[in-house]
Image (cartoon, rainbow, N blue to C red):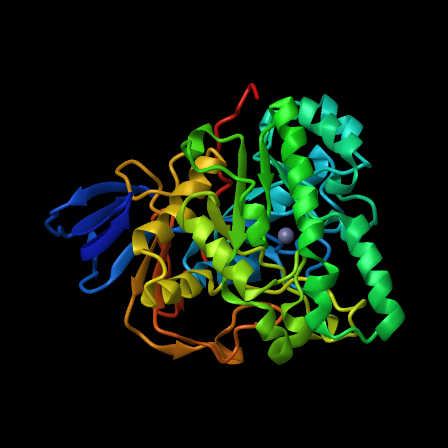
Length: 451
Ligand SMILES: [Zn+2]
């Protein structure tokens, strides 16, 4: 019986290097890296001409389970993730119910253990409704707490708008505090001005002027000041402006940073030029901003002021998107193409393969203190993806795996193809053929007992 997988002669991209070697997977882990002879119990995969990356770790997704499963669920969206080389994800709390208690968090883990093909973890939601309970909890048991998406269900629940709630959290929380950083006050004033002029029919191109640079910058600046005052562990989600990138430092290693941030792949990919073509389909919060912002974000990613890349994968049905401005839902599905997008930047000479792996694999594991993930190392979990860097294809409805069945990237030609994805040593995706008999694992992480 073949109980091990031997990937022969592949180009491994890991820890700042790209080199050709063989990799042996057994018992869920990477057993050996080097020059390895095949044995009868090895299922041999020829990796010649292909690149082997650690599985992507996506630090921010909205898989909509439980309660919003008409948009997506932990089975469909984790499958789309694996098709994109993403082997682990952290999901946000704005499901139904909102994940504001330990009980609802446990239920979500229970659902994932039955449905998710990829490895999973979940933020505990925090807002004005549960701040007193959260302040008393041993928060070191959570991978992180977050308010992301919660303000959609109830206005005024954004931490950035409530300095008192935010300070209470910063003073007490022992885990990572990941916040959605926009000042709703500024956004609302802009909304009113545009509503007066256009009524409900505000063109999508005004979205970045309504959800403005000022709204983002003021919120991020204030959050950082408060986090510093309390020496809290703050992570700013999905940065969108060049201005904000200057609020982050790159003169210490990620391991020592108390203030970290991320860029979501769509903010590197799209700019305000694309509203004309795609309209509400690229309405995200915070908004896609200018070409200059897009360039500034890439620059900050390359010089390490931005630590990780996420997708903020947020599916909605096409009907929910194609409504007038105020009714159109914000967010879009991205998880299936995040690596392909970044590899297009590599093809254009904007970023190296090693840097992509650092920002999508190594750094999320470091930032969220994950155990034995994010690197191609002996003894680590065998989460891997094998990619052909010279294979063209076009994103189309019939190759999307999202439950919502659409993507803002439809019609995009990619030059790279994800051929195989391994999760905990299992070959889950093999050139379009799926092994769906195995489920992902809950992600282990180191508990921080002090902040
Ligand atoms: Zn989000």
